[in-house]
Image (tube, rainbow, N blue to C red):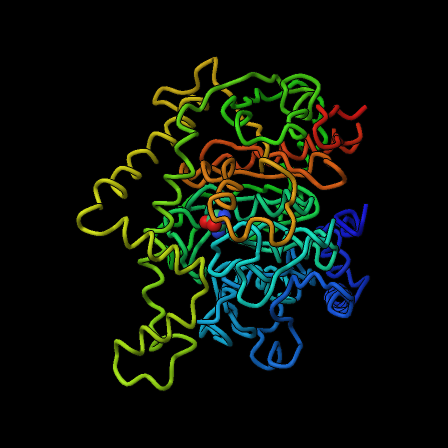
Length: 510
Ligand code: GLN
């Protein structure tokens, strides 16, 4: 193991907060430690570059940082925050030139909530510009490296948050997941990433990419840590009309209970056959072949079918680009961030600001999305994609047997899939091939299209690189999802996780 994941798997965040509340360590203890590690990373030869700004650095923190709450479930816990979540004391750039140095006049609801729980924002993390990408190579401020192998990508778009947790710089982090941007980098870096049901977590202060798909998610070294952070920031918010007024259960407690119940007869887990076909690297198949693989233990495993899976990536890229083209119209050089100072007309101001401010992937998406929404093609592309989106959601409804009248006997409680088709790829390998990059999301975009919750957890290594397994649950099923994930995590810890070399069939841990 080179660097990587395990280094961070130290103190659970529940224990950090307890030690602070009990006065065993100073309120600044964990934050000071985190800041030291972050600084040390910047000093090495090939820095991870997980952060775009760090609290306490020139231009950071200082007088405008809201005072931390003295107690609460995150008392004194350092949290890294993706740079598309608005904070008062640090810039919010979305890793774009067009928002270089931009300061938000308000904080995202999730940031206010984590502060109210005693959490401390130690820095803003690197990402693909506006969340568009799967490798963090689309950042205008340089790439982030994978802590497990610094010649490889950390995944994206929340690559900075995933790398920061995997390297042990911080115990937990927030990201956003529009098509997999929490689960995919979590898988490639070897940490846990949790995306909630659409509407579970407020998007107020999350810079919009594709509003009907965007959700804030969490990273942790363990299922319990990721669950705890997300439950603190979740729940109804009057500032987000799409946030649901539903009680948030104690997901961290559910994770602990799930770990204790590991191996006992429990859930029915479905493995969707479409997720194991084309595109899946043969070295990744082992855990998903039904029997001895990770879902084993107490779970009953059965193969299921989600027939519209093949349409998910094209559907996602029509809807996400259409929404992005509309959301990104606000960057015009007048209201936010950078502007072209020498422009002589309004049109020239827009054109120059946007030409200089947006990177190539963002430009590609605005063009694709504008085309899909244009009068002559709207029905053929956008209208059609909306219909297919419903079919993808119905696939899940069917396997979870969520019909009026309750659960049918042949339904499954959860689905288990690979998170990605392959382990982390090399820096520069896919950045010039957008379609190859888009296919990195093949197993994650379906959950966003349907709005269901999903979690990726480390299940083993291929050629020394972390690989993730994804658990998907029904709408509002976070409690059962984290319980099952923690059970699987406990079984993997006890049994030794699964390893393989490229091309081999792999073997379940002994
Ligand atoms: N990689 C996907 C995209 O580029 C997902 C991004 C995300 O979830 N923010 O759109």
